[in-house]
Every structure is written in structure tokens, then in C-alpha cells.
Image (cartoon, rainbow, N blue to C red):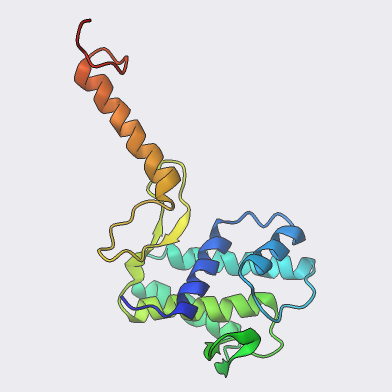
Length: 187
């Protein structure tokens, strides 16, 4: 599946937003800085509440039952954001499309660009790439961009590795009968 740089960048921001606590304005400012979101201006408590609401709507898309439900959610999200596609080459970046209107709030910016990025996946028939981590107790969101759509964990180094190590230890306990991690031979 071919995903251009801007869509990938936006999908990463959507996933990060879904997986963030956003426990205050400092966390929101950190999110904006981490993703180099342009044109946000000063952020205040109403911005935080609005971004949390957008995050909840993205979560509904990730958790939707099928493409029709996801499409309805995305159509409403991008329409309410006042989606206004325009070409731009700001801040030294090559030409790309912004879907938010000039002067849009941070929440409208995220809803428009994030909603369109998620819409591109739906149109490409790739909605199943929107996933939740399979690790027990995790449930973090991620976009599976692997070639064969086989990714199961939000992060292979943490959730995936933890489960693989637990499975290995369980096999060792079951296989040698001793559970001591030794070779099973008398010395």
C-alpha cells in the first residue's frame, strides 16, 4: 500500500493523539511540538477540551464495526471541521495539501487532516489496518503498515516482546519439567 509522507505523518499524529493522556495544556503543547503542527497559535483550556473531543471521535473510527460506520463518522468529522483543501509549501516543506481552513483551531486542524488521512485508508479498502494492540491490558491504537497486515502489537519492543518472552518461559516450564531455566541434564 502506497501512503504518501503527509498522510503517514498525519496518521502518526492521530495514533499518538489516541494513545496520549492529554492531562493538561502542557501535554497538548508537547503534542503540538512533537508533531510540528503549524499555525496553532496560543492554546487554552477550550482547545484542550475540543482536541479531547476530536480524539474521542477518532477512537470511534478505530473501533467502528465496518466501513459504512467508519465512513459516516469520518464524513461528519471532516464536514464539521470545515474541510478546505489547499496546497501549501510552508516552512521549507515541499508542496502538500492541508485540509483545514486558514485560521482553523487546533481541533479543526486535527479533525480535517486526520479525518482525511483516515478516509484515504477507507477509500483504499485498508480500514482493517486501523488496529488496537492485542497485548492483554494494552489496547493502544496503531496503524498496521506492514506489507502483509500481520502486526498485532502497538510496539514490538514492549508489548510484543513481553508476550513472546512470557510464551517462551511458559514453554520452558512445560518442556523441561523443572522450571529452573537449566538444561535439564544432571551434572
